[in-house]
Figure (cartoon, one colour):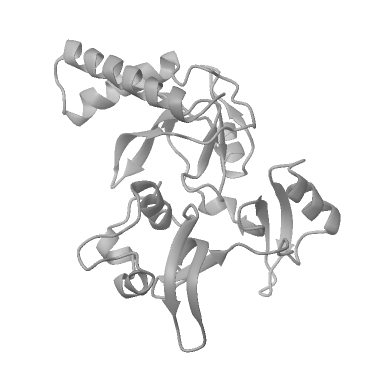
Amino acid sequence: MKNILIEEALPIAALSSLGLYDGARYLLDETDLSALLSGRRTSLVNLQNLVSESFTIDSLDAKLSLNTDANSLHEIRLHPIYREPKRSPDLLDIEADELISGEVKNIAKPINFPDGSTKTIVFEYDSETREFISYDPIGVEIPLQINGEQLDEKKKKDFAMGRIVQLTDGTMIQHRASEAQGILASRTALILTVLKEGATTSFLMKNLAPIMDVSIHKDPFSAGFESAFLEMKKTDGSISDELLQQRELEEFKSEYTRGYGRSVSR
C-alpha cells in the first residue's frame, strides 16, 4: 500500500534482463507493480530465456520481490517454486506443519537476533512457492480507515499481526504478506484510506482473494463500502455532482458484479 515513485524504486536493468521492461514500459500488471513498490511479493510470473554466467533457463515461474535493505540498491529477488517446502530454522516442526496444512494461517513468535534484540515476527507459508516467509509487524502499513471506518488501536495491532479483523459493517479483513495485494477479505472490494505526504487519500481495492476457502459475504459490497466510495469521489474532485457520484457507484457495482460472477464462484 506504500506509494513509491516507480523510477526511484524499481531497477530497470534487472527487470529488463528478466524480460519485464521493454525500454518504455514495465511488463507487469498494476497489482504486481504495486506489490513490488509496497515491499511484497508479486503473483507468479512466467520468466523466459533467463541467462547468467552460471546458468540458462528457458522458462521459470517465480514470484518477485525487492530487496530494499540499506545497502542493496533495490535488487530483484526471485522466489521460484520449490519441490518440497523450504523449512525455516525459526519454526518448530509442529509449527511448520500447521502452516503447511493450512490449519493456521500465520504464527507470531519472539525471535532472538544476533545483536541481542528480540522481536515478535509473523510467519506465513506460501503454498504456491512452498516457501515460508516472515515479516516484522512494526513495518506493516496500516490503513487509517477501511470502508470509511476508522480502525481503533486494537484493530490496528491485530491487522499488523495478521489476525482477522471484523469491521462494524460485517466485513472481515486480514493482512497477508504472501498475497500480492497484501490483504484478504470476506468481500472482494474495499475502500482503503491511508496517510500520504501528510494528507489522507482513499483508493479502491478490488478482486481481493477470500479470507477463507468460501467467502463469508456473497455481496461484494457493504453499506460502508458504498458510503466510502461516494466520499472518495467527492474528495478527489473527479465528480462534484452527487447524482453523478451515485450513478458512477451504481455503474461500478453493476459492471463489477457481472465480472465477479463470471470469474469466481463463492
